[in-house]
Length: 162
Image 1 (cartoon, rainbow, N blue to C red):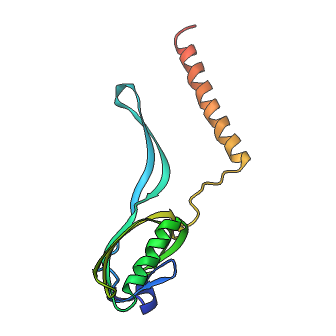
Image 2 (image 1 turned 90 degrees about the vertical axis):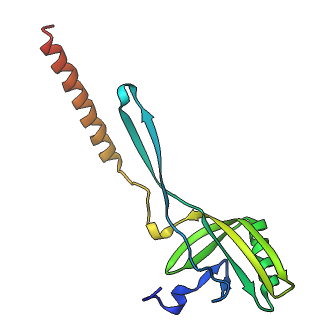
Image 3 (image 1 turned 120 degrees about the vertical axis):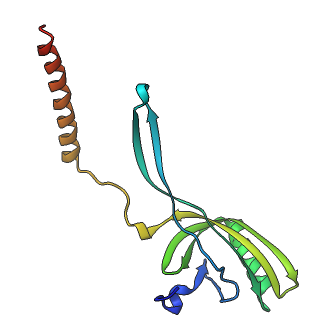
């Protein structure tokens, strides 16, 4: 990761710092756009976008050293607690919950392989995603919609000769 400081390259989860050996070769990010698709007669659609839906962050690696087993047990305790913890890597930050942690002791207590799944609770890197509309602007939008609807109805009535 050229251009990142050593601190930005560190992977930390809930206060546990992953060393160069235990850090995975790749980390993932991204997700979906949450939406509801209303399918209308004739093939038309109305799509309501609800905002970003972060994908789980999944990786695997191994711990090696005198504290390998105790680190695995600490991560498993984090999973069991189900608390929101911080996850940082590559200049990124997420608030997550460890939803899955599996470890395999290869050589007690110095070599442990692991896989982990973190469910994103919040991604503050995307800023405030909520839309704030004032009451005045909502009233303006509703009035404009009603005016458009009234014009359409009156235009239809006048055009039919009634």
